[in-house]
Image: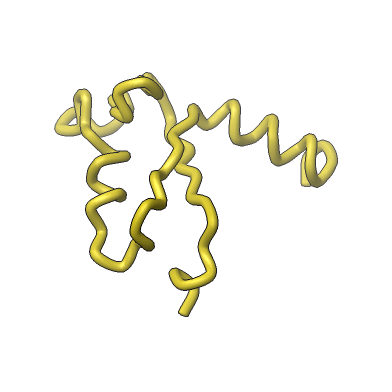
Length: 73
């Protein structure tokens, strides 16, 4: 049911993050060097057609959250 009402999907990941390529290379997961996270999520069968995930670094997501909700919330 949650999937049906989705209009956007954001992914925040620890870096390094290549937003143009949609890949992540978190230093604590060696097997995930240049891992195509956006493509993997976009391929999920329940994701609405035409909805493309957007990838940002975790610091960008935290900054946006503090802007919307207030500092340290």
